[in-house]
Amino acid sequence: MQKFKILFKTLLGFAFFLYLIGGGFAQAQTQKKPTVTRILFLLDASGSMYAKLDNDTRINVAKRLLSKTIDSLAPLKNVEVALRVYGHTSPPGARNCKDTRLEVPFRPKNHTEIKNRIQAINPKGTTLIAHSLLMSASDFPTDPYSRNVIILITDGIEECSGDPCAVSEALQSKGIILKPFIIGIGSTPDFKKAFDCVGKYYDANTEEGFNTVLNVVISQALNNTTAQVNLLDINGKPTETNVNMSFYDMKSNQLLYNYMHTINERGNPDTILLDPVYKYRMVVHTIPPVTKENIEVTPGKHTIIGVDAPQGQLTVRVDGLTNYNNLQFITRKAKDYKTLHVQDAIAKEKYIVGKYDVEVLCLPRMIFKEVSVDQSTTTTIQLPQPGKLIVSFQVQDFYADIYQMIRNELVWVCKLSTDKRMHQYVIQPGDYKIIYRAKGASRSSNTFERGFKITSGQATNITLN
Image 1 (spheres, rainbow, N blue to C red):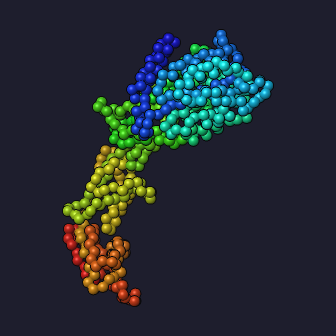
Image 2: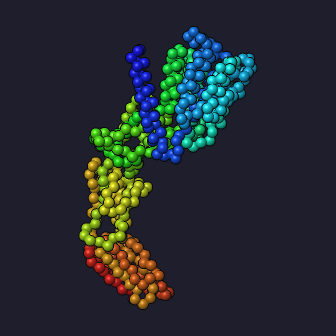
Image 3: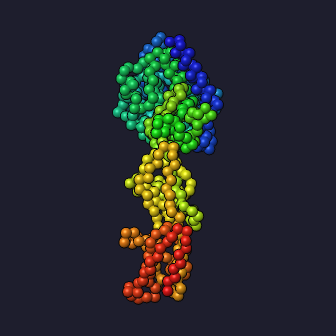
């Protein structure tokens, strides 16, 4: 037991040291000013708090330890506290399910006021957790940069008709509060089951246990925890890197962190800092993105997050010298119409290992089905050298379209503009036809066609008259 206490204090001290040297670092990447942590203590003052805990009453133990905690928070920057109490204004027989009140609101240097108010509390009535949580939502100032934390200290489960789970879920989903901490004083086995859906539950069945749990909760509310993300290749090795990772709150979908994945000088994925209060959805911005949900980090413990992200490279090359200006191609997952990326030819881009459909935006467009991208290799699609087509209108304007001949079928390539007399195209080698009619002709029978061949590296001139 003594070894455990020493280990716990060491971990707690290490976590607090990390907080001091870099606790707000990651959030500073996505936010414009330091994050304020606001802690609302929600204290149960129902009649049952007069029950014994060791050699004193539960309410006296709560007052003593809560006051000590308030003192420890007073010197910290960017930390604000407030106090809400329930069950303390109505007599025991009244069963007042609205008996909750914000006793001390958030404001600077209110710590002495909170301690004085705690000492003046006398338990009386019933346990109304759901309604108190609901009212707590309006206790926090509107501030997009704040972390809103509720620490509920209670010795009983809901006695009114409210649903604490539903209220907590709604407030978290709207981003009003983070997942609440619940400290159960003198609890029974039913407590954990009742509160698991509300927030992070901790038993405190002795004064020493209460003190330890309260310290743990405060540490989690304030300190970040180290983690590393292993981007695994096809062999399960953490070799993939140099890609951004976004971390979102699973409840509110709020973007919390962006980290560009890095392999450090020792060849290991670099250490990052995450807030242990959240449950995360992580998006690794590979092509296509890889998502991992319901990520939890253990406070005071280095957490390793593994995700499969094997990658290879894809590029398009063209033979010989060309006149292509910024040739691009579209990539899609095989048999999927959704565009993943529009990539410059010649450039290399990483993709998750798999099969892709590639559409090269040349004339005519060229489509390659189920192109394989393999681990740590470069897949190259090779195009023949194009030729050049020059079409001119000698006397009058025409309606004209170019078609490629493929197995005796006409495949449309492009339409010629009617507002200019000369057209130049960089075009792939093959057999083609141009079908045209003078703009002034009044009959379909005045339609003409001319076949031609495009050869790599050569120019073909056509004059329509």
